[in-house]
Image (cartoon, rainbow, N blue to C red; front, side):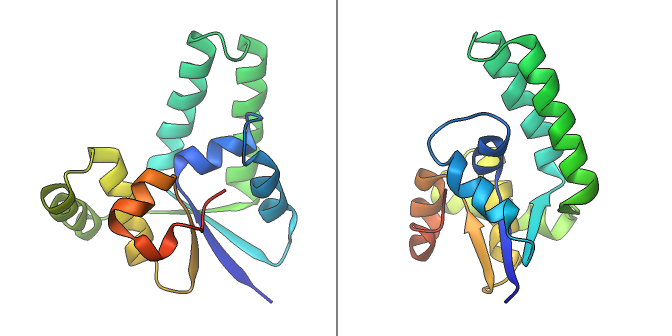
Length: 140
C-alpha cells in the first residue's frame, strides 16, 4: 500500500549522516511503495546542514561531498520536490506569530500541514510538538 512521507531537513539529513533515527529513514526510503516528498527549501537546508557538520568536524570534507552527491541522486530519482508557494509563506508567517516559531521551522511545518492528512510527517520532535501534537510520534 502506498504511503506518503514528507521529510523536513532534520529528518532528511539522517539519510546522509549516521545518527539516531537514520535506520528508520533508510527503512522508509527502501520501501518502494513509499512516496517521498521534500519541500524546495530542503535543497538549501540539507546542503547547509552537511556543511555545518563538516565545519564543526563531525564529518570530513570527503564525507560531505559523498553525502551531497547521494542527496543529488535521491532528488533526481527518489524524492518529489514540492514548490515553495506564496500561500505557504503566508501560512508560515501566521504560525510564527501564533506559535513563536523560527522562520525555517514555520516554513517546513506549514508545508507539512498543507500537504494533507494522509501524509506521514517526518518532523523534528520539538517542532512537531509545538504545533502538531498529533504528529509527535511521526518522526525518525
